[in-house]
Amino acid sequence: MQKLTIEYPLSTQSPRIVWELISNAHGLQKWLADNVTEEADTLTFTWGHPWTERDTKQSRVIEKEKYSYIRLLWDYHEETPEAIWEMRIEKSDLTDELNLLITDYAQDDEEEAELRELWDANLERLHRVSGL
Image (cartoon, rainbow, N blue to C red; front, top):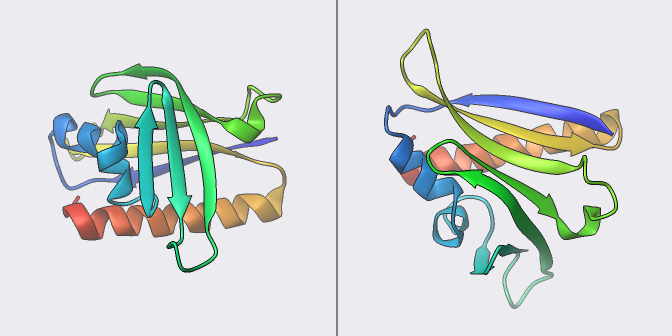
């Protein structure tokens, strides 16, 4: 497993706005998946539309601190607890604006490149829908 940490600058100083986009199904559905539902501590992500091929995955929230971070574990990684993914809000000392730090895990260099591309596309969508 290779740990991947990606930092994205955000054009806001409000952790509350960012938190609403990363901590619940409604916010995540705006930028991370086509459909996100929430039941207890489990988020279900669906990519694709009903008339096309769909991919559905579940992730369990294992820890979160309001306005700071949310840590999750994909259902297919139950046997590898180090494969937790996280979204963390941090303030930049230089710009005084917020950064979103994504931590994810890849099996190898090829998967790491794919993950970086996927997160870049997701964060571009976050920027488009929220202006962050």
